Image (cartoon, rainbow, N blue to C red; front, side, top):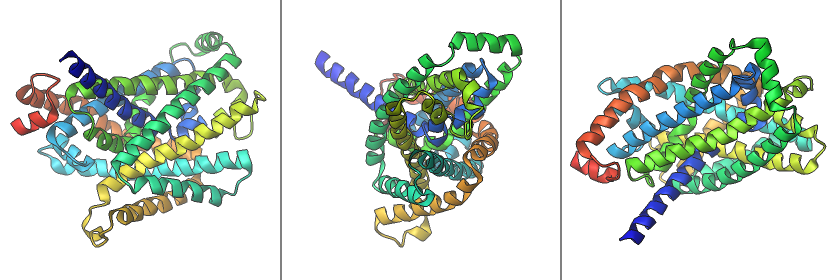
Length: 397
């Protein structure tokens, strides 16, 4: 009996880990890997930056948890069904999430394309269109073969990204200005004045990151069997994302004095910083991290879009499922390429920002209030024990 329980526990943690690494891989996109996102939303605020990061990752993990519990306990299949359930009896409010999600898909894929173009040009002098074509083919392949491939690929990419990113950011942190001195000087100049802005940016950041969540939720539907599984998965999600984003922000804080004075420094702050070390091996590793980040984020975001629209009526004439998914993926990538011409910084600052404000109102607040209440009521009525499977609770209901 004890061996059986240990096996079940190990499976629960492995399932939680696979979803958490998928969530990290989805979060670690072009804006994250280049450092542009960290600089725009956190580093520019000085010492309160790390507070903003903690707020962002905590809210993101908490809202994903509520969304996952609601989706799994009711047997929901898409984000459309999830938000209809959340907003019920005002089901049509789900269209607000549709608006948010579709705009953000364009923004995120555009940031991946723009980040790839900027980085590959600096690395290899590679033609912009050739680079985006290669990345487009890889993303297209991964998004047309279903959720199992997405989860496995994202798990592997997430682990590699995390290990390499932590190593790179740690080296950068140790080679920069003393972190405590940087924070002390910043506090002496600005005091507490930037703290409210950092907290607000953290809330906004958590909201626009929800563009990656539909794919995460779909990945979690088949492996997170109980509320306890969801709790473990979200605890790991917070830990991994806090570690990756936190280290990136702290490293850039120590190097802000340098990259702000360099050409393209604010567009590609991480690469600009690493090049100053004179360590080619570190720059090469970063190139791998950047490529994986661009791929992982684009894959998760596009797959969430594909999962929602692959079964719409006008596409039912295409009987081959991979072909149908390929058409949806190709469409969104082509549109995003046009947006990428406005530049990575503008996409991150304005595109993400305005969508983040919308996301606070239609995602963060509803999930942490109405969603929390509905989930607690449902689980209390149908599954007193957190270890009771969602299937049992659903059948009981």
